[in-house]
Image (cartoon, rainbow, N blue to C red; front, side, top):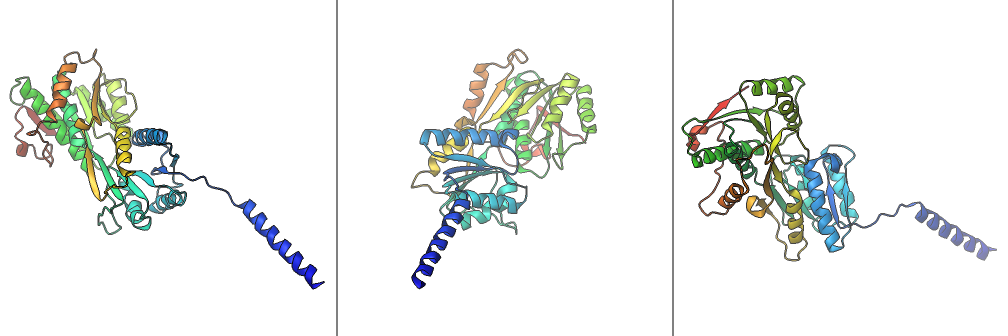
Length: 356
């Protein structure tokens, strides 16, 4: 009798274990993970481009990869999503933007066997301290070079009244603007244009959110002799595209995959190629993180496209000569803000005006 009781107990325990095992959901291991800021990949140009590079590397290497969209947009949401990716076995986790900085700061410490690639930001603690550990790389595409291409091409294309809109508290907002002004100055000098022959109006906005009335404001700028607008690629670029189309003015599109009817020039930021090249290095045994890597025109990760019918005066030969400048030893784009402090940059052909 006692023996039968023990046997029955053993059977019960085994049954419970089996049933418990059936109730657990199996998770497939994954090697490469793109964690977004809560945006769907297809809805954000940077994430879409980054995903293309990650997928290309994964396919070529035979590695499993996926994109993970956090349930919300808080640091805790990001941390939980990173944790899930690490627990699935991810060896490299790709994140983008300053909103991910806090989550990556802690994650690079908590998951030392995981390598982190953070686009356009550095890991920053709650107290504001930045630190890149040895398992983390920060990847930036040089916004000042992108702005330079835009400004140079705009003037070469015959535009003399330029506009620029950037975000005041974003470093890239300043970099795009500085490059834009210096590129316009260089093109005007190459064309032999006179002093103050180019007008550059600019505005630094406090945020990327815009009201419906902002569309009318931009349309008015075009109506007051403004010819072509460029921005730092923030969400108000959609409003600029609509205003340009409504007013019959020209636009320089920046970075994204969106198409705008009046975009005669387009600056392409190829995060896909940048991520692909970064992953090749990060998957090596001798990978050394803890640094910021800046990519640009010479890496073919910034490029320019244009509508040849709309700007026939800008040619392929001119574009190749422009790109060659970035490889010259004596070429550099200085730091700072050439729009807010134009006197420090010896602008003579370009007259900079702040507008509200």
